[in-house]
Image (cartoon, rainbow, N blue to C red; front, top):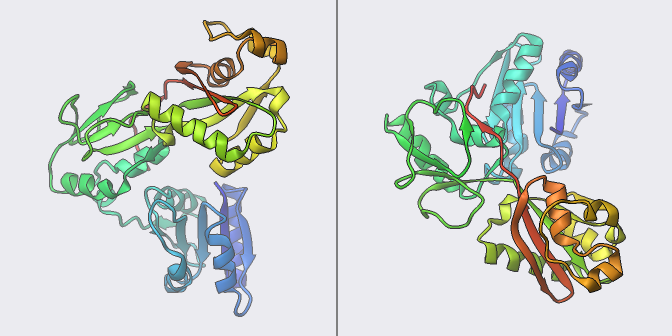
Length: 330
C-alpha cells in the first residue's frame, strides 16, 4: 500500500516517524507555508492512502477539489498530532481507510474513530470484504442498496461460483437463484445483483512482430466476449520470451496495468495438457503453441478458452480458483 503522510509541526513529525514503524513504506513530509495544496495534488492520485497529522478540517479542505468516487479515491486518514484519535474520512471500505486507521491507531495507542454505518452496527461491510478478498466491485452503485438492506434488518442472498471458507456473516444467506450478491468472473447474471469479480484469469498472447497495442486489445476484447468473461477478472499476461521486448505488447500491458510473464520454448513445451498445436508456430518459436501454454503456466490453472486468432494475434484464457474466506474485517 502506497501511503503518503504530511505533518505541520515538530510534534506531528515525531508522531509521523512513529507511524512509519508500523507502515515502513510510508513517506512523510512536513508542510511548508502554502505547500499543502500542491502536496495534496501530487499525492492524491499517486498513492493508495493519504495520512494528515493535524486538524480534520484542514484535511477536508485540502482533498475537496480532488474527490471523485469511492472506486477511485484513495483512503484518507487524519490523526491529531498527539496521537489521540485516528479518523478515516474518505474511502473507508473500498479504499481501506478504516483498516488503515485501525493499524495506525494500534501503533501509537490511539482510538480509531470509525463512523461507517455497517461498522458502527457490527454488520457485514460487503465492499470492505470484497477489497480484502481481492474482488473488484463491477457495479459499485449497488453497494448502498446492499448496505441499506442490512441496516434495515433484512437478509441479503449471495451466490458464489467458487467455494468460500468460514461461516456466512449475519443476515447473509446462500441462494443460487434469487441472489443479491454474485461472485463470478462471468458477465452473465442478474443485472440488479451486486457483482464481485475475482482476478483469476491469465491472458496468453502470441503476436507478430510490430503488432500494435490497440490490435492486441481488440483481440483480447473479442476473446473475453466469446468466453463470457468479465474484463475485470484479468490479472496477468503471459507469452514466450521471444516477445519479451515487443513494443506493442509492452504498451498494451502498461495501459491495462497488467504484469507480463515470459517463458522459454522449453518451459512452454513442458506444460502438461492438450493444446492447439501448430507446425508453423513450432518451426518459428520452438513450441507448438504459445498462448495456451503460456496462459496455463502463468495461472497454474486450466484453460478457460482455447486459442483465438486474428490480425496477427492469438489469445487464450486460463483460469484459477480464488481462495475466498469470511472472517473479521477489522
